[in-house]
Image (tube, rainbow, N blue to C red; front, side, top):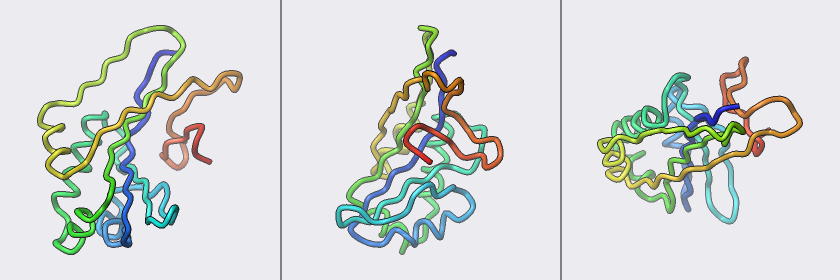
Length: 146
């Protein structure tokens, strides 16, 4: 198997309720997780569009954030952490894989106060399958998700 881009998650952490952001994003995103941990409200989101590159997903999220209402943008700005987590599968071929984030996209992420994280997932040894999108739900399935 070749190395491959899996998806880009937006991870949010706030002392306040993240629901206004999630409600406003609506069907533009999949909410992979929303709940409390360590005294914070946490959410992990994925863009609903299925065919985006890492660059496209980050740019789409930035567009959504840029169009938030004043109330929801206040919730966004109050987050203690806003991170775009770009996931790749390592592959087993030893082949090189390149994925570019354009300068404009990096500027957009910085403008909304979000960090960029890259996560490399190992190939699922022995299961005969790779991380990727579930064909029925369209959602990303990885080792760390049910």
